[in-house]
Amino acid sequence: MMKIFPTSSIKQLDAYTIEHEPIASIDLMERAAQALTDALITRWNTPSTPFVIFAGPGNNGGDALAVARLLAERGYRPAVYLFNPQGHLSDDCQTNRERLVTMQGVDFHEVSTQFSPPQLTAAHVVVDGLFGSGLNKPLGGGFAAVVKYINASSAQVVAIDVPSGLMGEDNSYNIQAHIIRADLTLSLQLPKLAFLFPENAPYVGKWQLLDIGLSAQAMEETDTDYALTEDDDILTLLKPRDKFAHKGNFGRALLIAGSQGMAGASVLAAKACLRSGVGLLTVHVPFCNNFIVQTAVPEAMTELDYSETCFSEATDTDDYQAIGMGPGLGTRPETVEAVLQQLDDCQTPMVLDADALNILGEHREYLGRLPQGSILTPHPKELERLVGKCRNSYERLDKARQLARSAGVHIVLKGAYSAVITPEGKCWFNPTGNPGMATGGSGDVLTGVLTALLAQGYEPGIAARLGVYIHGVAGDIARKRYGMTGMTAGDLVQALPLAWQALEEA
Image (cartoon, rainbow, N blue to C red):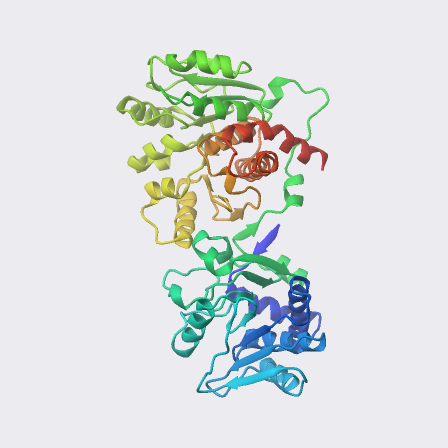
């Protein structure tokens, strides 16, 4: 896994590396500058590229000055603007200033009062080294004016570590106009939590991690509630299948899904469940959907509801190892009553999605009655029905963590980096998937996958991480086959066997 540390921990990691490697802080900065320069030259490998480097008075500015010197050593002729309005630079920034001012081929300007901005065109590459991850309040005054000037230009913008003005975690009280809008962010060693939130995408742009050799021991020993799942993590989660296994070894699952006009939700969830290794599957359906499900998913059994058109009465779940409930149910009064009764009666781990979550949002007192080991899979709006309105993704994540703790459940908060949240408040962000998955039915597919994994005896946290990951891999396979625009949820189902195969053979 790749840990994601709060910015308050970054200085600790730097300090530990400096003490225990050991390495002088100026040499660690030089190592970071080498990695940054290499990344820049990889993209802009022509020495005539007009780089304009904006450096602040702190260590982020020191990085930028060192990059300017290294670019000059490789034949580039950067223009450098060092902003020093207080007449004080950090020690390492001062050292890099002294190293830079004697360099040939560098157009160096130190700004203390009046700033005469350079002309920035679409041909220019701006390197933003004004402020790094240590910022804890919105930019103002002259620095805000510089940010606005850069943002108004047509230049390509590369941010060092984090776009200046962006907080590493919570930007609830930030000033959007005072944040650099980078096309590329070169993050040192690890990503920042803010990179994973959709509202910050206009500032972060694409982001790339650069290894600067921070202490692996320090990162391992420093605790954090956030991590980005990596491929190697998932390989350790998949259970091998015994040669003499039979269908009874892989669990019985029940899906409660569909209503009149919404049979497709139950079909998608059922197919995904069967394509994810469940031993036996039963789908509880109203009579009107029985023929559709039996025809579309012949491998599944059906259990008929008393209603012709909707889920209207709780059913016995004692013979099942996992229950998936919600896709396409609707919110008719009889369905609401049946869902609440099912929650009261059921002791089997459940995957709750779609209308089951909407019903829970209207009856929040039932959140404390959910079966142990259950997984909730809300998208942002469904989560807000459970926890109330949220100003941004950081607050939404925080409230989801509180809900996971109070209800004792795992939550999959769906999005570009879906977050799997444990009852202990730990968050695992998922790296797989693509925007082509933003289509009706994708959530139904995920419900089927998760229900299958729970039925097979996976712990809920592992089931959630593994299921979200493989769901995204299926989406990536479908994208390669059909493109993002033409993908449907059914394409995800068809890609699931290939996704599982890729994991089994890795």
